Length: 104
Image (cartoon, rainbow, N blue to C red; front, side, top):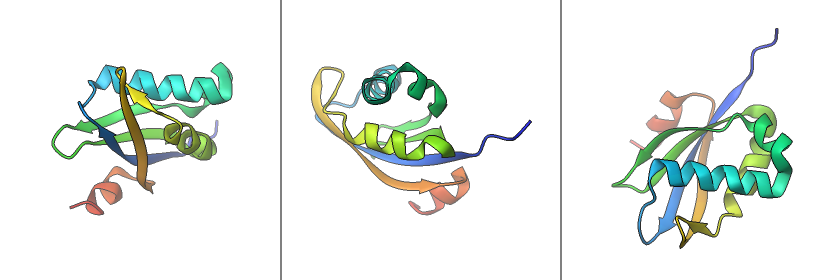
């Protein structure tokens, strides 16, 4: 069985009030489902790793094969928890250590 390669994305959240972890992951899943359907959403393997309230940054994990799908769907988000918002992909990395070292 082949190992699934993953990528970690650093996301910047531009919104008035920071959403909870559940609201953020729901918005990310909904955006992927809207653009690529249920099959596309299931292929991403999307997982929320970290949500930092102070810096308004989040780290998510997706599969390498669906990285472009995930990036496209994250930029299509226009609201989080019923408030206007936008999500920007700041960086992509193969490991969490490398991703965090770029922001320290």
